[in-house]
Image 1: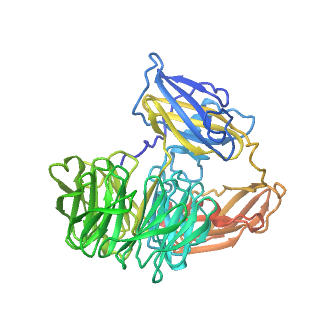
Image 2: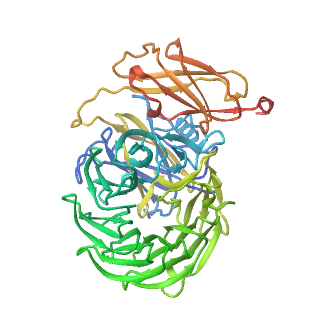
Image 3: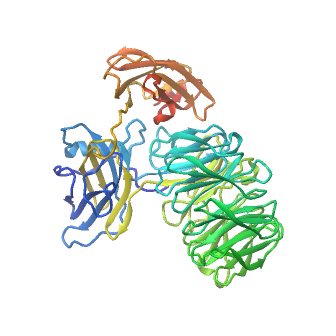
Length: 631
């Protein structure tokens, strides 16, 4: 399956001499010129400054024809940021080797920041989130890491800057806040009784959480900067769905049991009025183009159009009882509402508020997702996903479908209001979670079946998200991304263009921000030292490693409390031990893997305030002894 970049393992060409650190750097090879620049966003727009540690910066690669200066468009460059020792220079051979190591499926040699990859996140029926690296992977597994939750997640949403992921956990009355930079849970916020649905304002200032645990329930509002609750608003009897006007001045909350819609002033965080909208309002969607809110009533089958500014009903479209989910497609011209009872999709014109089509689809449709070309309808009662071409909607609604697994998603008890189908970073492709198959499928438009699949390692994936870290062509021949820079130091920016071939390591120097308060931090890293690449089932495996750290403690001080947690995916077996210090920062434990598979190795050090979830795990593959001789 072809994804973001080809896995290149060999034949990397020579890269030329190194260039000055920072500022604008230019390199030419094979008739192609690549100009690299970094713009710090910390100083504000229009102000020039050096790249500052722990601040955001825009990295740009301008790629042109060296002879004509013509921008080269539609390319797929790959780049990384990787720390190097102060005072050293990466020569062309070392640059090639560094890039080659990043392209190999070896989890133990990772760059500081990967600027090419994307991650697939699966919200599981189990109390965890799978983070899957579809490009690299390691040891036959593409599971990058597993994020443990206090309890099973119900809904989730990612911040616009991709730095934080919020997950509701109704059974424990909390919302987890996860930093995507290291996949660490930084807090679990008390979010009222049975927090369920999540919605982020367009400006990302407030996170809104529906509370479904009592009569006359409502929503909890959380400030995303302070991670604290700023309001608990009673609206009515739920369940609740949440939407906002484009300028975030008004929030709308459905109260299904009451048949009402609460209109909330975001500035005062108070209910302005409740509107009777119909029987069992179950879903809502806002159109920025028409500035209208659309409410789907499950009980009486009406779709109600409400003026977003005046909060008044302007139209009522009569569909059929059983409406489940309502969405507006990307151009904001058409609205879609699935009907789980009638196995249909109702399509309406946003400009005229008039129903256009009623389209038969698979049994028990419950979710809608869009790409530029198609609407995708997930049916809980069928393994087939239906597709409706958007460009034909003024005349007809043509339906095609493809199989996304062997079983119907409804055969699993895993349920979530979050999307089980999401667009992939590649144009015209989607990812489909099938919890009954415990698989994630990759489908490209125009194909009769998925091009491939990703295992979820015995877990039921009930919802998906994509975190795309790759370079984007922001203007012709200019490929850029915004990243949060690491701590101060000297870094390489290895660059690879496959065709035409360009290989080079640019220089990047990151300095401390003089306006940022100085903090004393402990940097802790693990270097694996085990000699055997694979463990053997039933045999003791010597897990030896070197602990590197800097901070309040003295360098190379012997640590007596480095804990090691080894578990077999998906957590069905685990072994815990305190590592034995051998001197010179080297430690070891021994464990016996009970069966073949991928084993994850986590580390903690309480005396340095390092917890298991603060570092990505290392991995070890265990094989049967009979197989070992052939590997």
